[in-house]
Length: 67
Image 1 (spheres, rainbow, N blue to C red):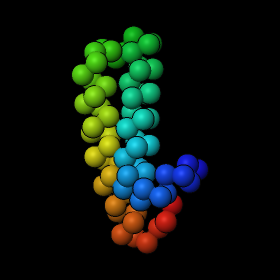
Image 2: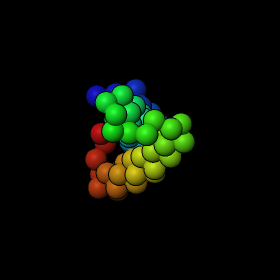
Image 3: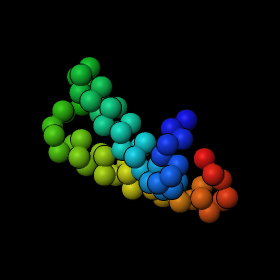
Image 4: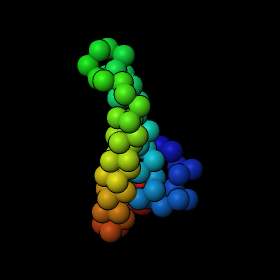
């Protein structure tokens, strides 16, 4: 899945995937009334998810996994 992102390396791949999914999730929460919908929440969530994703990708890379 998303093999074109493999050229960037696992940390970048997982950072991008997590950041995008976090923004989508926060948007959906705001639409059903559970989230605040403030613009800064999307930025903060994307940054934190990108950091978490980069760490996750780095650990997978250290374990010898390629995807």
